[in-house]
Length: 184
View (tube, rainbow, N blue to C red):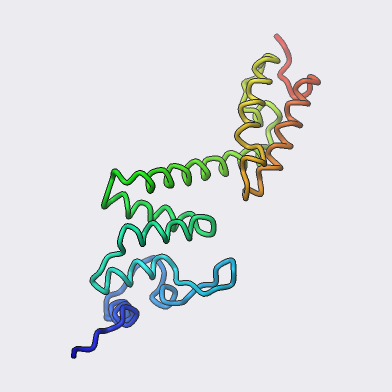
């Protein structure tokens, strides 16, 4: 019987076999297991994909989907890569497309909350309004943004509560007449 080489050995040989890699993680980094949030050891997603490629077998769509689910909360970037791997093979895969859309939506909400929290120019800019906005426009902007960044809708987003509080403070300031451009 022919002894089969372990994928780990193939990866080590391939990465150290004279080919210089420019950029990206080093071979040592790829092969090192990482600790996940629960303290259990796991390989990086790059190492797992490389191991499957080098062993001559690709990960099945079900394996990719499982890894995307596992990485979703701890490493959304890896999850997106696994989902794109599925969609490259099967563009009509509804579950992968839905998960990818949800991850992109979550990313957009995280960016929005960061922008609101980091906004320093004043209440009009927090609410994304132009100078001279009416009371109705202020209320409409507040309602729309507060629905997006409400902490109850953004579990796991540490900036959501701060963004929601900042939106309320900006609305209150504008209703009191503070932070508005002088009327012409």
